[in-house]
Length: 195
Image 1 (tube, rainbow, N blue to C red):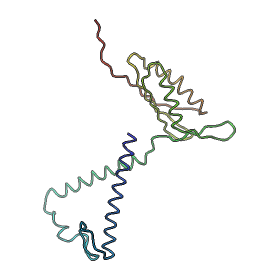
Image 2: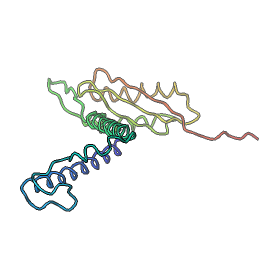
Image 3: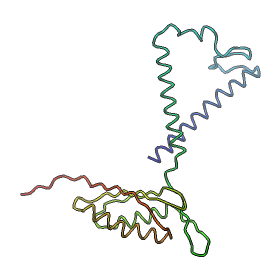
Image 4: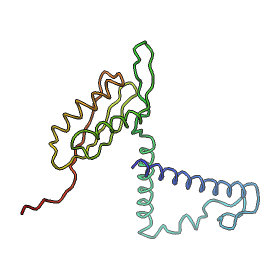
């Protein structure tokens, strides 16, 4: 999801930049009495943005205003989604580690995520583990997703995770606590035939 969001962000930013440069350049060219581009609707510095005929052209059409309002509402919702997605930081980039001498060191968030996921992968019956750090640098939280094999008891897998990987990560980072939200899912499998 994050890679898709990054790609959408880059494409939308690039398109918005191209449109703004093209329109702004055309307005400046016409404003300084330079020849207007062939695609530009206004040909001189004294042209109005919208003529009376253009402003009142669709006034009597019953479908015009609902379509305009719906299109603007969709654009507004997309813009708000994009803004929230860009501003919301999901992944913690670094964690403050107390070194014991009054100073603090920083640990890369991805390194701690990788170590936690690697140890969680070694828990018996865990097919795949994904870990994401959230929260603040001095009070990190974890989101762990475990994909369990069909034969595994979820309670046992959770107990092994909290007693092993999460405890080791908390101790090695020198954290007082490391709250975790754990999602457990089973691997999809076909029913076995008994003969």
